[in-house]
Length: 173
Image (cartoon, rainbow, N blue to C red; front, side, top):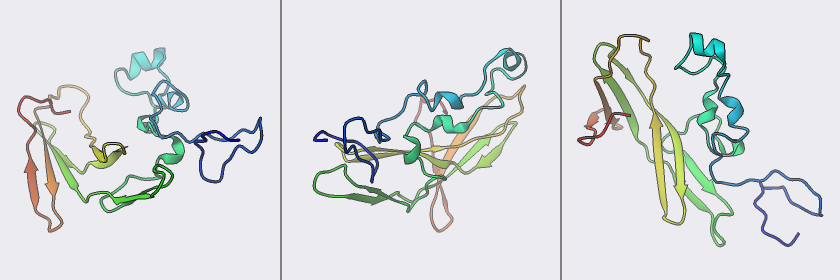
């Protein structure tokens, strides 16, 4: 049909009534399916035994806001290439993710060290900007723990670690 079509490669509307999977590139809201079905069961047993923690049937894929076909099968890493076709009328867009290797340390009674995973790649084509978000997870005892300090550092290729202090006045989130 002679109309704009935002579809996956190989899909097309050839005649009226055809059904094809739409391939939008905007975020899918947390309250929309298929994401909503990943949140888990928040019922009375959950309130009595798990609250305020996620239910046992919670799926972390709930955090993926991209169309399921645009979510990579594993975390991305520095050096991985992103190739966008069909987003610009004249050119394909190709770039590599910068090679940052972060280390997060939790100081205090439950001190631990972890390596955050590159969790989100947000591409803003009109501004020619890419935003990267890493996610870290710490295991903490359920009761009696106070988060005192969270520090991030960037690990360079030679193995050196460069501290990256949080800006003054901001929470460690």
